Length: 112
Image (cartoon, rainbow, N blue to C red; front, side, top):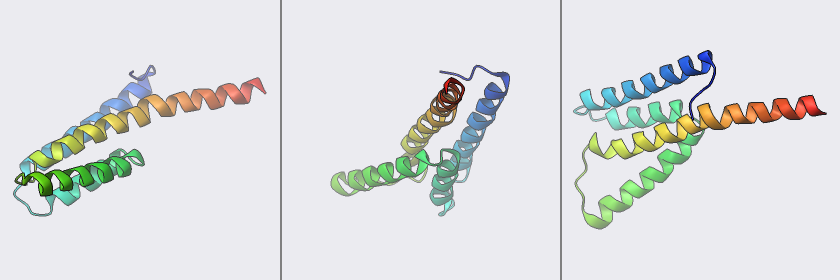
C-alpha cells in the first residue's frame, strides 16, 4: 500500500506533507471567513480528479446533516471528514491505482 521506489516514497511524503499543511492552514486560519473555500480547493487540487467527486459528495452530505438535524456549523471541524476522505482518495489514486495502471499499460505494451 505504499510506493516501492525511492522516488515514489519521496513523492508520497511530499504529497502527505502538503495535505498536512492544508489541515494546519485550516486550523490556524479558521477565523477567516473564506478559509473553508480555500481549504476545499486546496484538497481538490491535491486529490484531483477524485477530489472533485469527494468534495461534491461531502458537500451534499454536510448540507443535508446541517439542514435536517440542525447541527451547528464550525469552519474547521466540519472540514475534517472532507480532509480525511480527500487524503484517502488522493493517496489511493496517486500512489496505488496510478502505479498499477502504469504497470498494466507497460505489461500490455511489452506483451504485444
